[in-house]
Image 1 (cartoon, rainbow, N blue to C red):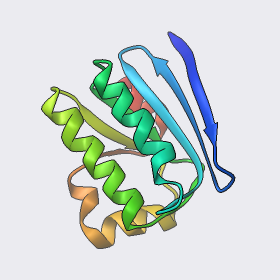
Image 2: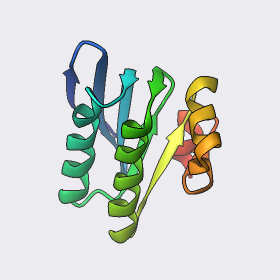
Image 3: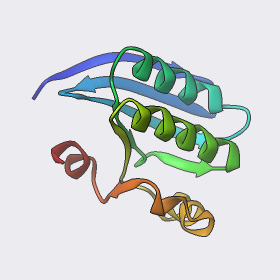
Image 4: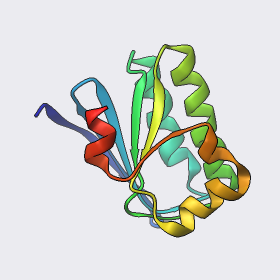
Length: 122
């Protein structure tokens, strides 16, 4: 499988690992995605789309919390990716994070996968 680590950023409460895997850019946020940490994820998401990668996969398996700011980061990335012919795929969401998406209705606008492998196979 084609995997290339692109980078890791850490802001204490949130760490984001970014890698290329095939035609996808995979983002693995670990910790809390909120007003104070949102840029740590939004900047590499924007950079990937700017670099021509429009299939963005978010591995949510280590994401413990996501507030409205974090949700807006993902919604913005979705709009940018879709305008470039791609999309944002969410994988392996924990129940507390999935609940935020369910309550807000955002789960209806993202492609959600049970596992990262499923998100990468589609």
